[in-house]
Structures are given as C-alpha cells and as structure tokens.
Image 1 (spheres, rainbow, N blue to C red):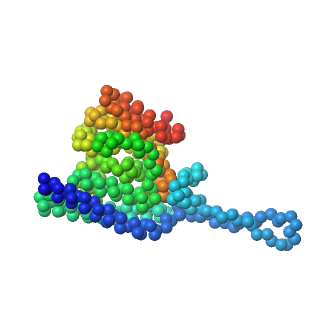
Image 2: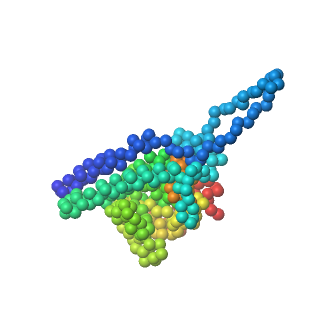
Image 3: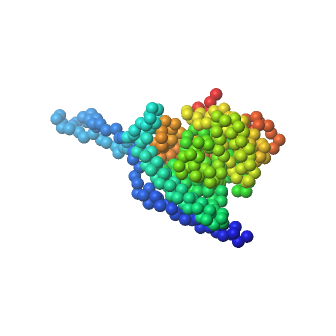
Length: 354
C-alpha cells in the first residue's frame, strides 16, 4: 500500500542520486590522458643511401614517415574500437612494479583504474550505509530492496569499465529472452574482468553471482555482497557447496537471474576447460533456460599475473550472447555438452582445450 509506494519512489530517486554521485569522477576521467602501456622505443634514425647525382660530401636527410610507438598504436586502436594487431598480443606493461613473491604486475594504467574504481565503490558504499541506517530508523520503510542493492553493483561495474575504456563489444543481444523470463547465465572464465563485463553489459539485466564466502570479510565489497544476497560458497566445504546449490535454485525461483562459470575457476591460459556439473543441476531443478555467453580478450586486458588491468580493453574485449538452451526433458550431461558447444563456438580453435 502506502509504505510500498513510498519505498518504490525512494528507490527511483535514490537511483538518480547514486548515478549522479558515481558519475562525479567522470569529469576527471574525461580529461585524463591514459599513460602509454609501454615506453616508446627510441634510437638514432638510419641514414638513407646517398641518391645518385648527389655531390660527394653533401648530406641527404633521412625520410621519416610519421609513426606511433607500439604502445601508442595499441592505445589508439583500443580507443578507436579497432582490434590490436597480432604482434601486440604479448603484454607490454610500461613503467610498473612487481608485488609479492609471485611478482604481480601493477603499471600506471592499473594504478589509475584501481584509484578511481575504489573511489566510486566508496561513494556507493556510503550511500548504501545511509540507506540501511534509514531503513533501521524507519522500521524497514526506507530500507533498500535486494534488487536495488544489486543494481548498485550493476551500475558500478558498468561505470568502471566505461571509464577504463574497457566496455566490451556485445554481440547477440537479440538472443536475450524477454526481461521477465529468468535465466541461468553460463560463461567461460579467463579474467577478473569477466565478472564486471557480465554484471554491467549483459543488456540491462541485473545478475546474482556465486562468490567465495571469504569476500564477505572484505571492507565495502562484503557489504555489497550481503545486502544484495549474492550466493556465497566455501569451496573446501562439501556442505557449503550443497547449500549454495539450494540457494541458487531459490534465487532463480525469486525471478532473479544468476550467472555462473561452469569451469569452476579461472583459466590461467585463456583456454576453455572442462565443465563441472553443478550449474546444470541448478538449471534443471529450477526449470529455467541456460543462456550461454562467450567472453574473449579479457585476459589480454587483465591477465592472471596482474593486480589490475594493464591497458584499455575497448576493441579487444568481446561478449557473444548465444541462443538460450531449454532444460526441460534433458539430463545434466546433455545440458553440459550443449552449453559447452555453444560457448566454444565463439572461441578460436587455439582457445579450446583438447
């Protein structure tokens, strides 16, 4: 009645406020010039051969065609939306530091991404804390809904990738089911950028995800995870795994879209690995369609040995949405085979593990 109407109005106004707050760093971002991913290679220009007819002792100036340093060419291709040349596939970090025993890379571009993404996350965190406090003081009247909390994460992911020149090129949006139809999204996993890509750019859909239970202890992120009721799991605990399957089915039955990586963990070399059966049990028991999604290029932007992205991803990162897969009357193995075939169809042969 009146209470729910007030709460809905509050959520709509709050969304506009959050977007305004989260967009505050845009002015800075738009005036920021990304550092080159790798230092330009300098050297002495080669002298051209003396043209015929030129008097001995006269000097000819070398003709120099305008060129870009490899790193600048890569950034230009990324900003303009073109794919990077094949010769640029090898990471070029530019000025960077190595952190920890594993030598995790952090370069200037990654430092910039880390700085503004943390600032935006903190703004959203403060807003969420204020809403939770208002909800407590008003006996739940102004408490943000679970969907609203998930929307904050959706907006954060979209904004972080956009400001980082890393919004993926999305193909197959026409394959998305109608908004009211719940789906289980299954995608390949090669980079930490896979999660914000799905969260921010799978149409306008808000997605609930599986996450390690330990993340709840992380400041800011833990508040988001708990408030949005994401599905937490302890990998080492068989009991926790079974509980997470039940929670995922319950989440889907609340008409909330869920995404999962059937490989179970991130592929360190970008190749598609064997799938685990849990995702397909969830889809079959909840009676929803599976939406296969192929991600590509994310590991070139945010590789496994980097703390943060090493370069812009626009023009490198792609997302291919395939046609939904019906689950009714099919076994888990049949669903697994069909889903893996769909995801693999969007990858080059060298990224499909034998």
